[in-house]
Image (cartoon, rainbow, N blue to C red; front, side, top):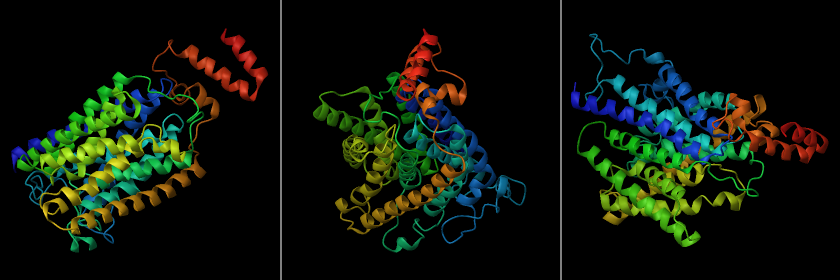
Length: 441
């Protein structure tokens, strides 16, 4: 057993797990005050569901020894981690990197958790919590586990797959598995569930930007486990991934702020936080393949492109509430494809030709199609079986009160919620609205 690698991978797993509460803060601050608890609960709900499902059949489907058509592993081969923890002599089983396989399980479950949680930002303010919880279990089983298997366990999108003959696909820490996957799922659900009341007509501003910036800081901190941990050892590759992650993220934040300044005349705190996440997303698949200089170029491009992409929802009319599509789908695509240009061994800019670029485009498109089709099937099935959307009056008054029986700011926002309820009622029943207003008074 390599105790140094074991210690580092346990630390990395803990860092990645911290990212999901960090995401809850990031998304919670971006939400409206009447739905902040629901937004945070969607992240915590993902931790609860995926934390159990992964141990039962997720590891087996993702990293089991069987390979069903290059798409997924047998869920029953290592059900509840049977045959994973100990070797034939009763000692802890080690993987190829000489640390215990059970530590690998700890590391990989945190990736599955954060991927599902990312999707929730696209459907803020209007989704039933019960439907979300069921979706979490089904989506991680039918979409995330197969994608992880295809990319990281000798599946269709791995170097051992059919495209490996062109060039070995590179996804160092989850550009396809995590970010393109979650971003595309977020877009599909936003279209299935529909737009929030008042979308593009009334302001829907973040209610607590300090909370959002705190969340972004925790995400950046946790992301060192995400990227440097994907070196699977305490080694130079981990150090390179760490430096590239910092360089790209810093550059993306500046790229986003510069884009804002030129376009809007202001460099905002929300832009800084969003730029941080855009840079983290873009460098994820490329962290071990680029030089620090290449990481800076990638970060600048990702920050500018994602800043522009978040406005597409107003042009095309889809309500991606917290910019999951603009940051994670676009950022994941930029980072995955940019490897074909910036890889220090096979990239176009380093004399490697176009083979790497071609294979990176192929795996990115494949991830978009697989996630889009599977999420559409799951989303429509749940819409028919359970319903996705809360009632209109729930959305007006605040989803926190009706879904969870709580308010993040008890006594401060209650009066405003009551006023919003009166306004909403007035549109459908003026007499009831008058009664409600008198009762509030």
